[in-house]
Length: 142
Ligand code: FES
Image: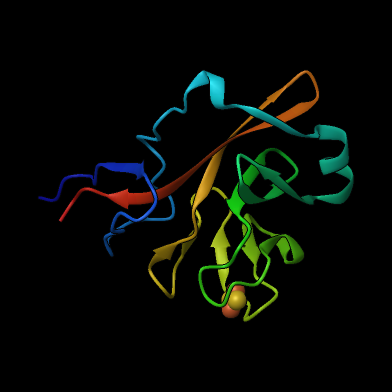
């Protein structure tokens, strides 16, 4: 009998095992409270669905799915195109470069079995905050 994978987001540069799942979001590491940076308003994301921002030296693409705001590292892991110039559709961000499809929540790409880094997002009083510390989904299972 198999056991569920223990998933977590880890710092940049750590390996992302091939078994990681797009639905594996349990175990997200919470960012430090002080690191939140206000980057946008909910109103502008509702209107434009996406926005490029910079915070803490990071290039970040914000996306609004109709329910929630998500943040991914803007520079595509494939050939460095800007994800904020892509489109958000059905919970996936489609890169304008070669149409890789990233899960907006985890950064996971099915065909490549890799992840684009993401950032924690918080919405409060109509403002959108990100924690500019890159997270990469990983699975601790074998
Ligand atoms: S640059 Fe993003 S898919 Fe190629």
